[in-house]
Length: 443
Image (tube, rainbow, N blue to C red):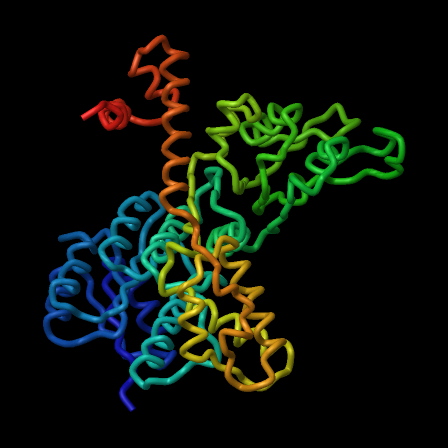
C-alpha cells in the first residue's frame, strides 16, 4: 500500500530535517524542499496528499506555493507554518484555501496530529467509508458550511493572541463552544478555562465571585476564597452573558482587564493575573451602550476581536450534518441500536427555521430518538409543528433597519449633525455612514 505523501517546504535546515525524519518514521512519504523554487518543482512533478509550507522562504512566499497548488486544481490539504508576527499572512493563507496553520515554535507531535487528521478525512472520502460519527471540523464544533469555515479560520487566527474577544450570536448558536475552541487552539490550552455565567450570579455576590474575598471580608466569609479571575490565571476566563454584569462593577472589570490586576474583597493588596478574557452576549451591546445600560469603554475593551456566530438558518447543509451528529451521540448514550433519518424527516428538518438554533436541533433529535420505536426516524417523531412558520424575514429586516436608523439619528443629534464625529461614535467609517444616509433619501 502506498504511503500518504507529504510535501515539506522550510528553509531552516534543522527544522526541515527534524520534521522530515519524524514524519517518515510515522509512515509518511516525505519530499522536502529548502526553498520556494524547489517546492515549485516538486509540485509540478507529482501529487501530494498534504503540503506543509513555511510562509517565509528566501526566494518567495509560501503563499506563492499555495496559489500554485490552487492554480493546478490540486486536492492537497495545506498546512502553513508561521512565526508569531505572521498572523495576518496566515489569515490570508486560509482565505486562499489553506486548511490550517501552526505557529512556531510547535511540537512535532502537533504537526503529525494535524496531518493525520486530514489524512483520515481523505481516506474516508476516497474509500466511501462512513465514520463512526460525524467528526467535528474544529475543536468540538460540527459544520462545513461557508459561514462555519470562516468561523474556523477566525478562531485559528485569533487563538494565540492575547486580546480580549467578544462572541455574539443568538441563543443556542454555540457561543460557549467557540470559547472552548479558542482556548483549546491557543497557547493557553494547558492552563485553566474558567467559565462564569454572569446571568446566574445575584448582584450582591457578583464582586466576590469575580474577585474573591479575604476571610472576614463580610458576614459569612469564614475563609479566604479566590475569585474567577485568579482561578483562570495563565488560562482563559469566559464571561458568558456579559451584558448582565452590574453597572456598578463594570468600571472595576475594565480596570482588571487593562491592568491585569485584581483585588479580593477585604484585601488592600492587588494580585497580578495572566488571564485572557473571552466574553459572550446574545444581545446588542451597542444598543445597551446607547441606552446607558453598558459602559462604552468596557464594550470596546471587550470587542477588540469581535466574533459573530451565524444562526442555524444561515448554515444550510449543516442542519443535516448536525442532525446526524446528534443522532449518533443520542443512540450511543442511550445504548440503543443505530437509527437513521428518513428522507421525509430530513426534508422536515431542512424546512424548519430553527429559531432556537443548534440547541433546538439537539433537543429535537433527542426527542426523536426517545419517541421512535423503529430504526428509521420519521417526521412525526421530530415533534416539529407542520404549521411552523419561519421567521418573518421581512419583518425582522425592517426592525433591524429601524434600529439602525434610530442609532444613526441619535449619533447625529449628539454631534449636532457633524457626520465625521457621528461615524466615529457609531464605530463605522464616514463612507459607510454616508451610504446609509444616502439610502434613506427619497427616490
